[in-house]
Image (cartoon, rainbow, N blue to C red; front, side):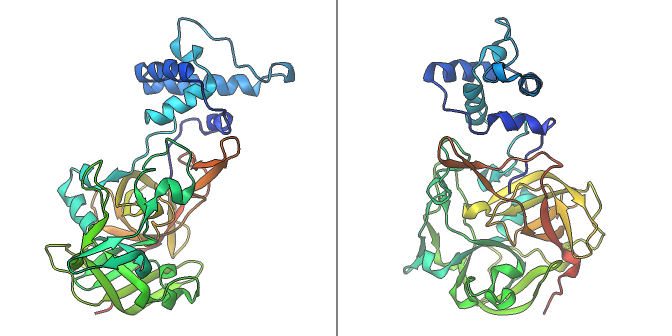
Length: 360
């Protein structure tokens, strides 16, 4: 589930289920949001929330009096909500996920190249030199409301992984049947490991991948799946050439204990869309010996993603579990991203890298 930071989490409650805004209201709101600072926007949502808390039944459809000299205060609630979404301006913080082509740090980009998307073989169609990817848009797959981020990107991968030796991928144990013992999960022969599944630019979704970047699995060489540990190591059918990806080897795994408030980031394939790098998270709970909890911007499809220390860029864990990804908007009969405060909801569980047992 995506984690967005929020200085006043409860203010989001009034917005769920808001009716669509009229065109003229939305135009006014868009201008007001564009002209406002983050602090002004935050204060306006706080003001409206406080007004609702003290509202009587006879005034339940009103908010506190609006001042004509304050543009945000004159904006209709539904229009204000839609404008903040469309402008990517939100009091809950920004969606930290970034596409591959927007990663400016070469060190992080190298880690992104080592990330691999897991596909059902049925979702791939090989030819002589390309493998076509069979995918619907994220909006179609998740039945999203208009305006949700990345809605037009393809959604086809079901899990994520990280190359940790030239021919070995680290992923979550529940992503492979051989570890999960779940018949609903594909067995290894029916999984394809795809490198380079990312957006080259804002308008170029990956419809086909060069054949040399697509691998099959040869064997599962280790793994566990229980209440505290969830990981798997998969041997590929051939080594990955260095020109495609360089592995995040054991020397790049962190031996230091993960600490509360430690800054971390994640690289993977949220909801099966092309690769996303999501920085800006921190560790919330370290009480379990097998996993820690962080407020990472992750979704289903991120399972198996590598989680890294923000300062050292060393691998600290494998993303395995989280909260609900999307919530149903009953008014508009579609789904919206589930937004939580920085310290709200349950957090995302990350198997500690220290429990993974590498195999030669």
